[in-house]
Image (cartoon, rainbow, N blue to C red; front, side, top):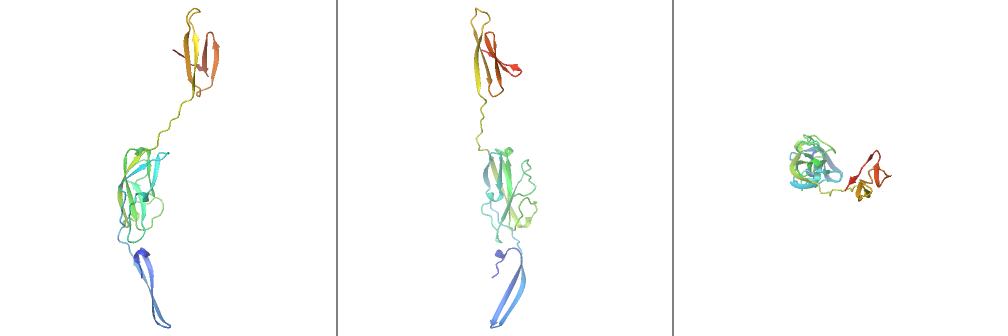
Length: 208
């Protein structure tokens, strides 16, 4: 028995064979055109959450938003796009994946998932591609950044206590110099009654 749903849309050749006894057989062949006039039934996750990755982006397959879409004529195929103009991904065509970026963090992004009941090529397709054989639904996507921030500690620092007295009889006052070790190479020179750190072309000290 010919099953239009199994055969799919298009033209099909049907052959009937009639047998009336030994050496008594006759066949006839004709064409059957199956037309798909009913769009697929689309069912999607209306609300979902997406977390960005370490590169502050996320690519989500169109089928991820599907929640049981079907067609009475066979398999279904998926595309997706963002609805509003944005700097992350063009919204004037359908894609295999929808892209989310760092500018979306904390926002709810509206996307359209489109379901086709005819095969679609990989990659981008125009908005009117097989529109009569497609249905679509709106998905609201909350974009989050769940990755913990990283902290890079500064370079090691050291302190040198040096003393300098304004007169031979006065008590010495402490002078401390602090600079990061990783910032540059330091040289130490001896001066009367105190030491001074020098960085290439300049010096730095702090009196406490």
